[in-house]
Image 1 (cartoon, rainbow, N blue to C red):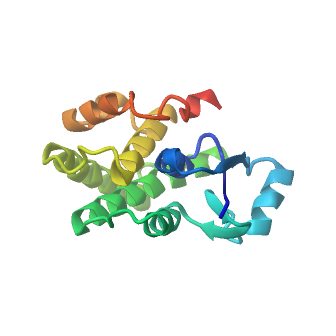
Image 2 (image 1 turned 180 degrees about the horizontal axis):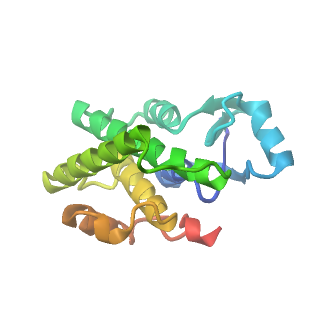
Length: 194
């Protein structure tokens, strides 16, 4: 069985899978969807036009969480607990809430922070960050595993894109980010290197 992971160097969803696959043999193929030929390549393997895509013997599997679940089962790893599933859901929701306005601004669409939708997004972000801070304080993200890799990838990407400046992070989140910098492949997958 061969694995080829398609994704960008800056995507936090790709990064979490790259970190998770650190000990699983695979190829990594850079796909920059902003370039038309590479976007066409992505379209051939995923009608979602989202990364990452894991090609398993050239058959595509979409979405980071589904890729993780497949690899977890295939490589006989312990399933996530209910608490860990909730943590990953919170991380995924926050990541989506950060990416949407980022992409809107990138493509020239105004983001009005006074708009009710964006106020709701901001409130959701605050609630999720508080929840994640509590989970860290309770020791639920002490292991370097998929939930921790997902959280680190999201927070680091948000700081890289200046969507979530470090001073706004609560103390447990700040300690968490600083504590992850020495983990395997974190430096090599830094989006700032792209």
